[in-house]
Length: 556
Image (cartoon, rainbow, N blue to C red; front, side):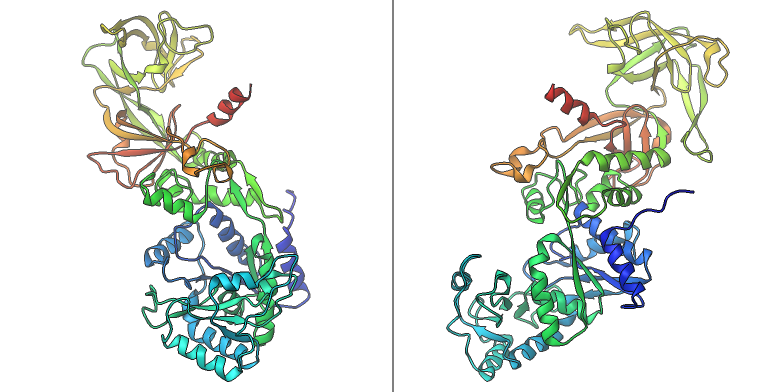
C-alpha cells in the first residue's frame, strides 16, 4: 500500500476549518488581472486554488481583477479562460471586479459615513511624503478632517466626472503612525478617465486593488483567499476593511512564489519582449506563458505534475527549469508517437540493395503503449541520415558510421560502410554501404551484434518539413536579477530554423498540437501554422538534459 501524500500547510488549515465546523464547504478563487497572458507562475496558483476544491468539498471561482482599465483587454480575458481550461480545470462562477463597482462604491460611502475615509486633494508625491518611513511616523493630510458631508459630496462628484485625473483620491482614515506603512491612510479610490473593456465610460473612478480584493472575496463568500507572500503586509488592510464594513469574513493566506531558472515571468518584461519583437508574440514557444508552452508541445499533465512536485511553501525559491523539462519528457515518453526525421541530411546508398526495389517495414508507434499500434515505413536503396552520424576518421567508441564500421538502421537492416564521396570543398556528399538481408528487424537470426542504431528516411519517400529547434530564451540562471538590461542576456541560439528537413511520410497528416518523438533528436509537436503543404514541427525538449552537461563543462 502506497503512503498517503502529506498535506501542505494550507491543506492543513482547511482540514482543521472543516473538522471544527467553521465551514461546510470551502470556496477559493483565481483572480488574474487581464493585462497579459498567464505564465508558469500563474499555473502554480491555478493548480493550488482549483486543486484544493478537488481535494476538499467546495468550488473555485474565476474572477478577473479588472480595476485598471488602461492595461486590460478582452483578448487577455479570452486567453486566460482558454489556458485554465486547457490545464484541465473548470470554474464554478465567472466574475469580474467590475461586476461589483456599484457595491464597492457603496462600501466606500459606508466608510465615509463612519468617519473612516476622506477625500484628499494632495498629489501622489505629497501623499508619498506624508507616509513617513518605516522608522518615522507619517503626517496627517491637511484634508483629513473634512466633514462626513463634505467627503460624501466630493466623492459623489468624483464619480460624476467633475474632476480631472489625479485631482483627488479617497483614502482610508486609519493611523499615520501605524507600524505597517500600508495602514497609513491608504488610497482606496483614484480618478481615471479611461475606457473600460466591460463598463465602457460608465465609471471614471476605480477602486485600488487593496480595496476591491477583500470586498470581492467577501461578496463571493470566499473562505480561503490565497495570495503570494508579498501580500502579507496587505492582509491587515484586507481584514480592516472587512471588519469595518461588517461583511462576510473572508480570510487571506499566503504562499511563496516559485521562480523558474533561465526565465522571466514579470508581465512588464514579457510585454517588452513582445512589443520589441524579440519574440514572435505571447505564444512564442520560448515564452514562459501557458500558451507559449502549449504551442511548444508541453502537456497540461506535465505542467500539473511540475506544480505538484514543487509544492507550496512559505519561502521564495528558484526552481531549476530542468525539473519542468523532466516532467514534460516523462509524460511525452508515454504518449508521443515515434517517428523518424533527418534535420542535417547526407545521402547513404546501399550498394547491394537492388535499384528500384522498395519494401514496407512495420514500426511501433510507441513502445511504451501496448495499444499504440504500428505504422508503415517505406525503405529503399537510398536513404537520408544525419551528417553527424558519419565520421571519416571515427575515434574509438564511435558507434555510428565510418569506413569499416557496422550499425543497425532502426526498424531495418544491419549495414557496413565501405566508402564515401566528397565534393571539391571536402564535404561528404554520399556514403556507401552494404546491407545484410538476413538482419531485418524482427526477423534477424544472424547472431550479428552491433553497438549502434541509427535513424534514417527513405529518399524516394521523404517529405520536406520545417523544423524549429527551440532552446532556453536566456543564457543566465536569473536574468531579472542580473545587472543591466535583462534583454542583454537573451540566448542568441534560442531558435534555429531548419527550412528543409526530411521526414517520413507518416508525419504528413498531423494536426496542430500532435506530439512526436523524433528518434534520437527529441520531442516535437506540430505547430499551429503548419499546413499539409508546409508542415512545421517545434522541438519541445531534447531527449536528455543537454544543459546540465554544458553547465558541468563550464564549471570544470
